[in-house]
Amino acid sequence: MDFRELTSTDMYEIKLDGILSSYDYKVLTRLYQPIIGFGAVSLFITLWSELEADQTYSTSVNFHERLFGVMQCNTYQFIEFRKRLEAAGLLTTYVKKNKDDYKYLYILKSPLSPCEFFEHPLYSILLKRNLKDVEFEKTKTIFIKVGKPDKDYVDVSASFNEVYSYDKDSDVVINNDPLLGKEKGLPRVDFDFDTLIKAFKDFIFPINLLLTDEIKTEIASLASVYNIGVYDMRGIIQQSLQVKDNKRYIDVKKLRENAHNYARTYLTIPAFKQEQEKIENQVSAGQFSDKVEMFNNLTPIEFLTIKNGGVPPIPQDVAVIDELNSKTNLTDPVINVLLDYTLITQDNKLIKDYVMKIAGTLMRSRIMTAVDAMIYFNNSGRRKKDVVYEIKKDEPEVVKKTQKFDSKIDEEGYQAFLDFVKAGDKNGKN
Image 1 (cartoon, rainbow, N blue to C red):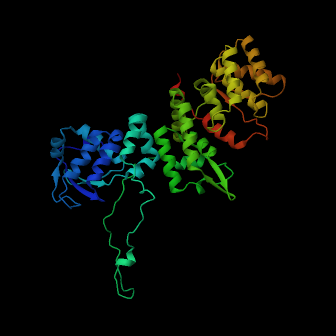
Image 2: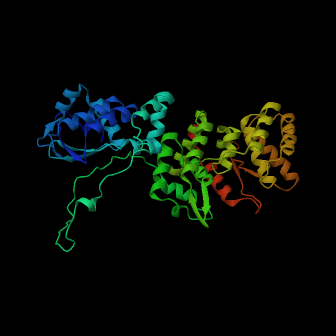
Image 3: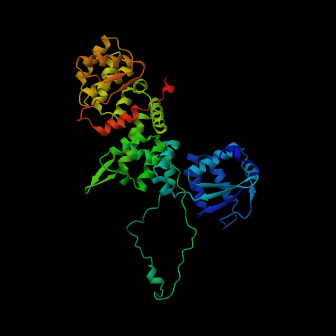
């Protein structure tokens, strides 16, 4: 809800969904606080303190004015602290509208155990990022499990059957009443799996059969921590596919490694991430513009990544781009058109000698824009009766590429490419 709908006169109640102990306080301050901040942890502890001993539900209804006073915060700050707890899965917020006011119900969840915390892909990465390596390892040692005693010790503990006995024929009534347990609060991470499945629509195997709950949690967590979009994640998943006993599966370890490698390569390129996010938003919103937009807004590396369906180009292809950048004065939009034209006419092969020969011709022809390059290739194609680009006469600045692809070309990769090609906001030109 918007913060304007929360006022100091709104009432609230607190409920505990799980079990909290003094050890959880240590987990909150040592592990969660570096991620969610001291304000969010303070709010959690404040709400926790309002529950009476051994109570899981507050016995009184209070106003938010009291919370603001205890925490010495304003409405804006309170909303921010609350959202951080909600996102971390430590708090669930419900609201009920009465005639003239609102009544909130805050449900506290138990934090993860240290073992669960460090094994979680999202939390462990964020904690290490915020604390840095040395402090992260120091913090981790605090929660290291006590090892087994040395071999000189012998286990002489009694077993259950040695101490207790029971009559197996006695009548014992077991009902299904819900009992209090250690209900763990997992982080709330959103990911558009519907769009991800659509991105795999031409894949040789139904990808949804591989998306178990564990894999979905992993994908959503990695996407969140590394800011990976749907189409980039598609390529990462493809790289992580394995086969064992004739069964396909997504290898979690490889998924993490590939996501990390992707982030290490591309998170240092803000323009790439901004363009990817813009493209995906426009695809989901159904807004389409012409291919020239993509030629103008992407670097050659980014263009080939999209051409590959989200998979970064191989070293040989990168070497071709490096040579174009170092030995020619062609602009990125012109290089993108050159790469596109080469892949179309050479059965999806990027042959360096062929590319450099055409690059020299483009330089001598003073080709400086994507549109000029497309017109150039069209004129060249007419001589060979093979026009690659269709340019509308009434819209000279708008260029569309016809789908004149040889049957040898990977249709799956081409479709993924078209999804990106058609995405571009005409109003967002630089």
